[in-house]
Amino acid sequence: MFEIISTQGLQLGMFVADLDRPWLGTPFLLQGFLLENVEDLAALRDLCRFVTIDRGRSTGDEYRADSTQHFKAEKRAPGPPPLIIYPNKRKLAIPTLVVGTVRELAGRRFPAIHYQEDIRIEEELPRARTSFDRTQELLKDLGQQVATGKLPDIEHIETTVDGLVECVVRNPDSLLWLAKLKQTDNLTYDHTLNVAIHLMAFGRHLGLSPDDLHMLGMGGLLKDVGFISLPQELIHKPSGLTREERERMREHVNLGREMLADQLEIPDMVWQIVLKHHERIDGSGYPARLHGDEVGLFAEMAGITDSYCAMIFPRPFRPARNGQWVIDELNSMRGHRFTASVVDEFIQFVGLYPVGTLVELNSGEVGVVVEQNRVRRLKPRVMILLGPDKTRNQSAGTLNLLNDPMVSQGIPYRIIGILPPGAHDIDPREFYL
Image (cartoon, rainbow, N blue to C red; front, side):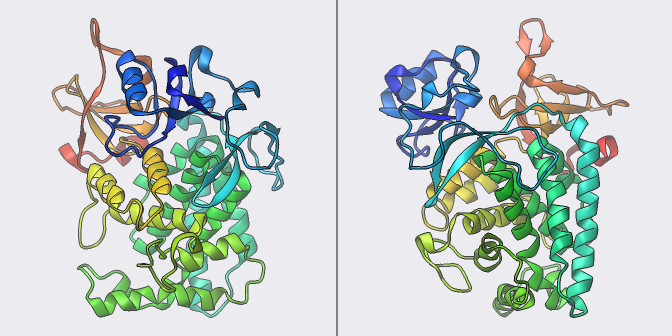
């Protein structure tokens, strides 16, 4: 539920979703934040004339979940009315969804869904684990089908993706948690599933419909199908690739096109991801060296998600990259490899503390982020793994930093630093899988 207002009309409790200028060069650490103090209010009024606020993520009197009166200032394209009920075409097991205002991103207009944040990760995790395991099995079956010259079973893929979409709609952190922890010894399958999950969760963050999330999930699972035809020793090479090897790896896009050419039931938006996920708006991508709007929103989303997952997860020849390093790297692509607004939205989606991040608290305790807070994103839910003396907790409990639990009288818990994976010999899987 987005509304463009003058900064003179800003009030504490409003969620600032966008500025009338780039976020880079402003004093705001987060791209999108809850306005909670007069210092930030003064800074916004000094820097900007207009800002976009999200009523659905605002608090107190500024929150509006079911009113149309706050859309008067929205610059909408012709389309559906501000509030409609999403028609559940695929009969998914999801709650009733409300559609808000029309948004525009990377040349595509869409009515944004307002997703509720009602289901906790503990409630969703059993269902998410079932869907996750089924998708892992699907990828194995898909590899066997293609390797033996058979056509992929698109109906099986669609049914499996429906299960993932239902989980992403109810609570995306459940699948993001499993993607972080349930790694196998097959790099290609792990990466494919990680990208598909992050891509759907990114689409949910943008307010795309469950039907669009379905297309993103299918595209995420099928985009690298061409790798199956490449030598496995090349894909799993434990060192960096030579120039010739990189060119060989790039053939996977056209190989995938050839494998799927006879699948007439593949939707066009899925094809856009398969064919264009390595294209970049400055023409530096492949295989067609497309420019600008020729790439398209879904392909851009797939491209930036693919890049993020390749950096944030470990590879055979290097460990996982530091989260802040990855954010800086994505920012360096802003405006030339990817549309600026797509980069801004993706960074806002992953946040400073993605699910699975090891953090140290001001109490000296060490924990892992199990659930993000999409309004106050500096205050996620954290599972405490180590005590202040760094001894392991026999029964790991959780702290919701949103509730301002106290370390001691008058001092609330807060995160003071991000730890690298494996710090203090911690394996979160021992605690929560």
